[in-house]
Image 1 (cartoon, rainbow, N blue to C red):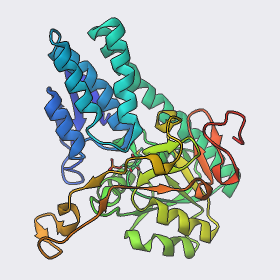
Image 2 (image 1 turned 60 degrees about the vertical axis):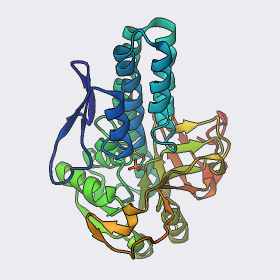
Image 3 (image 1 turned 180 degrees about the vertical axis):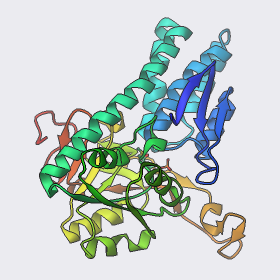
Image 4 (image 1 turned 90 degrees about the horizontal axis):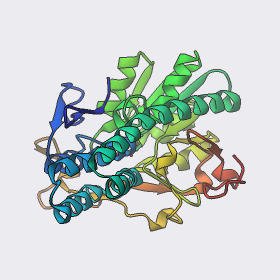
Amino acid sequence: MRTIDWQDGLIVAIDQTRLPHEVEFLRIGTVDELIAAIRSLAIRGAPAIGVAGALGVALAARLHPDDPARLRRVVDAIRAARPTAVNLAWGVDRVRARLDAEGAEAALAEALAVLEEDVRCCRALSERGARWLVETVGPQVAVQTHCNAGALATVEWGTALGVVRSLQEHGALTHVYASETRPLLQGARLTVWELAQIGAPHTLVVDSAAASVLAAGLVDAVVVGADRITANGDVINKVGTYPLALAAARAGVPMVVAAPESTVDLATATGRDVHIEVRAPEEITALGAAAVAPAGTETLNYAFDVTPADLVTAIVTESRVILPADGGRPDDPTGRA
Ligand code: MRU
């Protein structure tokens, strides 16, 4: 099953807001619908929104063939739908360049290439990550993860959960601890759903128990995805990743980031230069329809955080392993990899 695809001129994507209760697909035929799906996290996860952006440009080109000014405006709007994951801008820019040079049909071909590449890259980085883990921590690996970096966050295989799936295929996975991921519960709703689908043994913990899981020696590695990796090796990922990395360092457990090269942003120097999305107060002042904080409470609802490079043991992509805590940098082709 593909999380996102192109069918009969429409973007078809699983509605991640309905999981784990219902598996429903959105059939998106307008740019407004696409932007709403990305903003509401119906389509979410860095690689998946990169593909959505790429397909969105192809869709827009079909909708506005004779209005270049409008086309430019709506493509800009897709690119700006969420600010933190670099994949969205990357996917949009890649297809827009092809559109400008060769027209709408070439743009669609480029968008479909982005989609297919995601499948190949996720498979390759997952194999590389699983191999690195087995070589580094031993033949049997228990993993702790955060948020959802699985099939749902990509086209069909996943990044961090792709590594988990590769470990499982090689008989090297013992257990997965997934943190619930406040406030939108991507861990509880999506990661646990995916782990159940693939039959991987797993346990759900609250975010604030993550350090205790590490301190208790229950896991051999933390494996997470990323929304952006800056030139110096800082990692921007779902809020809660930075505390996990601090706890992993204290426990002496490797902190591994699995992401495609499309998440590596060499144009941005450090995590301090990244726009961290701040989302609506209601996401933390209410649970569904029930208020859990006094009306009008001020919030600071960071959607992501920055894990400094020195806390990142390894970044695994489809083409390399970078070791930031050991001095490796994404922008250094000769760096330790
Ligand atoms: O707000 P979300 O759910 O889009 O955040 C997603 C994450 O932080 C993921 O860990 C990241 O995009 C990597 S997904 C392969």
